[in-house]
Amino acid sequence: MSDTPTPSPSAPPRPKRPWTILGRLAQAVREQNWFAVALELGIVVVGVVIGFQVTAWGQARSDAAREQMYLRQLAADLAQTERLIVRQDSFRLRRVIPSARSLLRSFGHEPKPPADSVLAWFPIAWQQGYLHPVLGTASALVSSGNVDLIRDDSLRSAIITYLELNQQLMEQQRIQYDIAEAAGQRISQRVDISEWIFRTWPDSVREARSREPGYTGLLPTGDWSSPIPLDVEAFYADPLMYTSAWSLSLELGHLATTHREMRESAAALRERVEAELDR
Image (cartoon, rainbow, N blue to C red):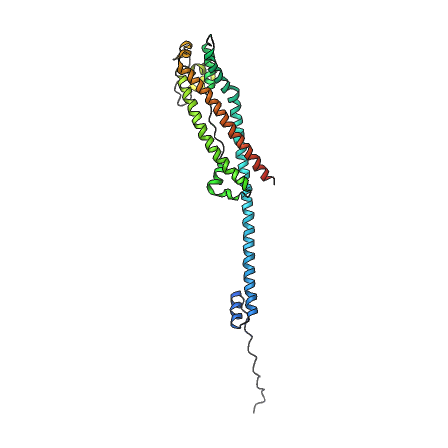
């Protein structure tokens, strides 16, 4: 008989605890451990809620940063629009509109002004100009739907209103420009502005222009005489010239009003945008 002791039976190994929440939840259900089931479900719900909160917080920060970027770009566009209008209207109000009005008033004067006066007024008056407000950022905001990034409801509405107003003003400007341009074209049938250009430009400028590609010979070199000499008596006796001068002067005034509305609307919105950026 052997003296070797008989080994005692080993204890059964303890079951491993599942590492995943779903595994622990399944085990708790099998064991009917309802407290553990409720605890695991609670952990899942809290985790999902925290995840949603973190995602929403990150999205809110991203949206706020994009809003600030759009507002800075919009403020820059509005300031540029104001500068463009001030620069062009400065010349228009100082020279263009006064020249057009001088030409119109001259029809009621006796004796009639000399040809030199007409040749001084008309070429300046026929520079009505066409303005394009800088609408890139406002248009992108509205067309892309990113205008919803603007948290201030009244500012968001103001941006949409500004864009709609300027689209209307641009169409209004186009009509006024076309009327003024047609009036200038009619007057140019009797007033040859090449004569004015030839008299006012230095010889060096005329020579340089004559060497440019596509030069059509508007400014001849050497001895020169106007192909359409201005006949002052015929000009002032033509009713079409008077109505054209009246139409040109009137529409230039309307254009100035339209441009003032563009500038004022840009300035008003810029102030609101800058106030939002300073908050």
